[in-house]
Image: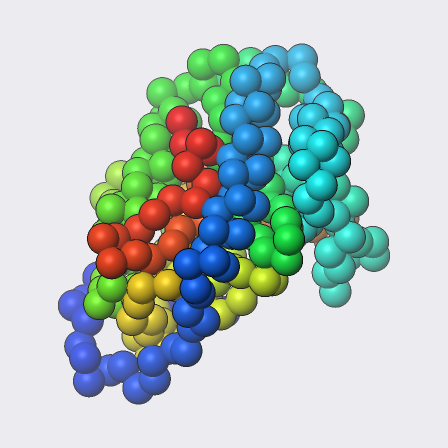
Length: 280
């Protein structure tokens, strides 16, 4: 858990007591991650085209399963265990509707006009992983919900635009947090981005906000780092809770939340999005 710093104070280099060690990938490894990311991008693109009122989240998962089987990749989420849940995660995608932030389980629930649904998907191919998420608007949600989705997407765009060798992650996180809070929204604290490569979750943790812990364990971006950046933003409070199924994370106040994610490679020219097709 990250302890959040009040306000958006400037980074003090003297505060940084440790620089997080992060794996540096070769061009061959990046190409393999790009291939996995391309499958994830294809899945999310297909789901954006299909998601509409009346469609069940189980049907969306079936579409993802078909692409995964066709490409010979492996679903990263299916079978993952969680100490708070009695059963392993049962699906290839997370499908989180409205107040559900992340880890929603696909099932018979139908999408309704005005809903938003965040779909997260990850696959492994030839030993390397790709991971991305997108929030889809079903029909025409309220103007405030539409704004929530757009602002959350803009946080991801900030990270893509700003990430480059020599940049501290805390500087990017500060811009992301400021953008969300200026819009009146809350940045989720309990779930953050992560490194990715041979495993779905690798070092470092990538919060979308500034904390004392981040400043003390900051990440200096270097060429060859692979990062899964995933801002999650709530219309109200950033506080969350987990439903009795042990998986589905919802906002504590029941207000909607949005979620976007890309797998990025840090190059000498900035960030390359390895799940590019997933972008709207």
